[in-house]
Image 1: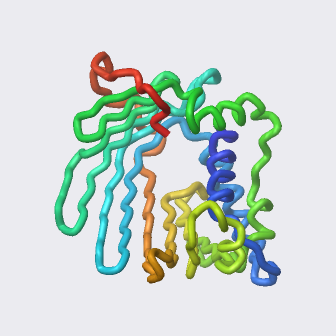
Image 2 (image 1 turned 90 degrees about the vertical axis):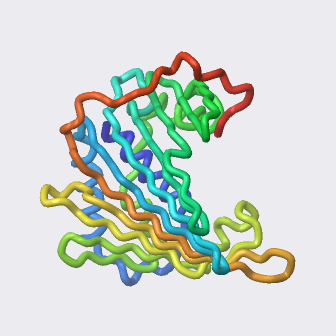
Length: 249
């Protein structure tokens, strides 16, 4: 499943496009990331936990995502995957407010009891299908990032990428509203075997609304666990999930 991870890295690149002179790039850092992606491509399964902390003008939202994934067969678009989300907004907690499953090329989603399903060849996933059908043409490496980085460094098992926020603002102009990025940092912690143990995104941006700026700060901490130790996923009864009348995504 090397192409799956390469495409995932490519999506991250699309979200984080930036540019600069590149005079602070440690080639060893990018090589280590390339090697880590290659090792992850050999995984058969994994578990994960992700914590998302977001704050804007005194309001705070905390979300926890957790689940597992089993790498797909050749004819599958995505891994069979489970995800549960807990959320807390301004101190009000909602446990398991969302559950999502990718199973046999179908997305199943339950949000606060409302259950829907859709095939993975529709909506936003149709883009992934097109990419998978031409997977032999996919060749995403860390070289794609290099022209867009302000700096890349490696300290022990920690790789840190910093993006040029001024250019980033130009790249996403017209797609995110009147937003100005202040900071965008991606840190990856390598496991002992050189694959990825965890990664962190730190994002700061300012969005203008009604003439006043709102500062948005978001930290995303994603950790892998139980690599190659998951044989099956715990799945609900999908019989009461209704076909979505329109794409969920």
